[in-house]
Length: 414
Ligand code: LLP
Image (cartoon, rainbow, N blue to C red; front, side):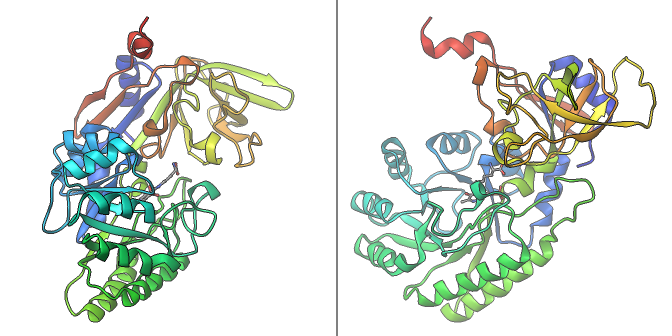
């Protein structure tokens, strides 16, 4: 992301307070353009589901994936159409289970479903013959930036186990469900090695299918660099591999096959930052702690997966003793848990990071926070959801205001 200047970020912090999420619409549009060779780009909105971001996606011709009734609601309110489509649906619901209210809504609004379990086929088939469905296949292997984001193989709960594909197809026929296509998402952080294996598996499953389909989906999982200088995945190479697979599938069926892709982080991660203010600096033994006003209740990824986010400093009014010096620093938040640390390994061990000399009143920028940032926030410790701002060209707008204490307590009927 071309990060907005320190002056702009400081001005936004002064206007809206911290912690504050800031996104850049141009960066999102740039990512969308990089995937334009795919027939359909379907945004996995779990990465960043603010309705204004969804509207930006819709304006750019992107379609949407929903994994819950809440995400269906968001998509519908952002203007994505429900109802039966003759081709690529605007909303596809992807899950491994139907909870009861979601099943009702999916049937009532004829929302296309990407089926992740045999039970879902029974539950939908018995009620809604003719419904358009995808089959999400677990190919027996997976890959992720952490074990928690590996969505393939026998340790993952996701998808229909590949050995049950024929059973699933038989059920679509029994219930007269309309099979749109096959889908695979083996995890977040796919590399080229795994990609070839996934593409090969997709071609094999299509050949074994025995009935016709109109589309295949490459799932999501495209990585973005989180570390400075990290190499970036080449989307055109990614497309070439999938396009070659698609051609083999087309040769098998004898007609064109639509190729969809379903990224979350690739579209929004580097469009967003989290801005926080330094509120305390203290040394404990060999560790120098810089404590900010954002915690894992805001940005959960480091505490949850040991994820790395590049962190930079906007100096405040306190002058630094030496402009170029960096200090080994542990960066942490305000929560009541020792795990509320932004610099930690997946094991939970606290790590030091070289940071310029930092004082109370400086701002820290957490980069690469536009995906799985605000969407994974919680009200833990009764902290309020932070606001979100969208920058577009020379202007910006508040796309979510800060939650209030009345809103925090509203459900408790006080
Ligand atoms: N499609 C399906 C079916 C998925 O389950 C996911 C992510 C995606 C697409 C998008 O994956 P992406 O392109 O964003 O990697 N909270 C974790 C990521 C969990 C992803 C879950 N599923 C994180 O912060 O890294």
